[in-house]
Length: 144
Image (cartoon, rainbow, N blue to C red):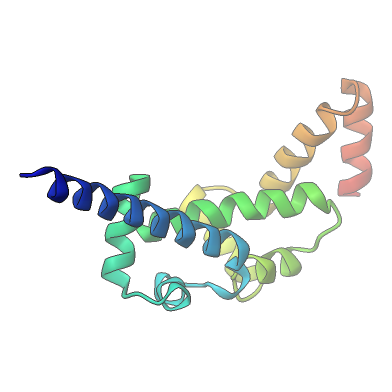
């Protein structure tokens, strides 16, 4: 392989990496309108197999797994930023149809419940702000 071919291969890999990073950025920014991998592929203008290969090579997960992980992270971020967020609003903001979809998603893929996630996220959030006694009182207040 000559130097020109080596540069071409290197440039091609850099382009693929940029495409993978762009795909991840689109997912993170627009997850509310991305329910399935097909929706994600359509948003970035490629086929599902190409998206899956791109994501697998650069992130070590297939597109479906990464979609689930990012959705879970977004659920936690929303709860932390708005402790009063309803399960319905969290579901809609993360690309799920309704609160039942959210509950099924959390149970099926992470073996947890919305209440458990909410409690854990709020506990971590308040622990960073207050002493343990204040944390318990604050969580009791938020959870009613």
